[in-house]
Length: 420
Image (cartoon, rainbow, N blue to C red):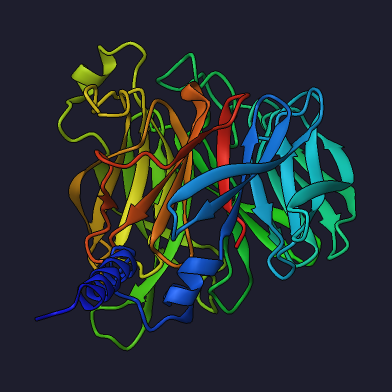
């Protein structure tokens, strides 16, 4: 007869195995061994419009999300955070207020708290930034500007240049949102040999502004027009093999807020034969393919696309949709969506897969963990941040109808960043 203790050991082993396998098949990675799952939590930051940057802790093993500390400053609109590329405890935030600007912080891994290092005032409405060596480049939406700052690994900040824009012609097709130039993001392309450059989608002007980077200076070299009324918001670069397999193709995917589309461009960088970057449009894809443009326009509020991200293995692309209310009967409350696309690894073409539950209303921002197994979503209108497990094979979120790994973050959370 089989003993009770033996049966109990088999049951415990089966439960443990199921727990690990539920996080994906990448079990040879030491970060996803049973020791990692039982002992190592992951920190995230969440920026809000209410003056807070909260540090959250996610436990993959227990599937719990908690707030461990909060930095607060009055009149601080912390709507975008990034990590220094070579110093992981150095965190930068924009201030979207008036005056706008950028702020640097040190993350103490022992206390799990942020402490302010420096601030440089800037143009009002600073919404996005990137760091290239000792240069920080920011976009100011309501200030119609692009601005640069000098920084270093100590977190110091000082002002450099600013570039303010007006519309060359009358307002765009969307007269409420395209009445002026509105730079919305800065994306860096450093994969080519002649010189690094930044792309700034200008939602108000329907342009991609191209800036060549030279040390701590930038120079606008091109203005690439997108289709009128698109309202370009955020973009991401990805590399993939060419059809012949002998070269690497560079693709830029652009999320268009006002038309709820994502446009794929094949990018030809600077080279000996060309002083310009070439963006060849491949195709535009709807992020809400079940709704016609007329149906979307008739909704109140009108849906609009927000954040865009690529999976670690470059197989999947995600775009968040705000105000689409695609999941009104979700178990944990009504939810907007995140559109999931599969990327053709040779052509860059996108295939719509499905809409994923965003976890609640107004997913202004989301981010994918570097392991490829987790996604975090900042839900502006419900004051909530939620974490989903991700199936790396399908790109889909796991158990959204049975699990609610979420925490309240007051003050309208609008940016969530994995810090580890």
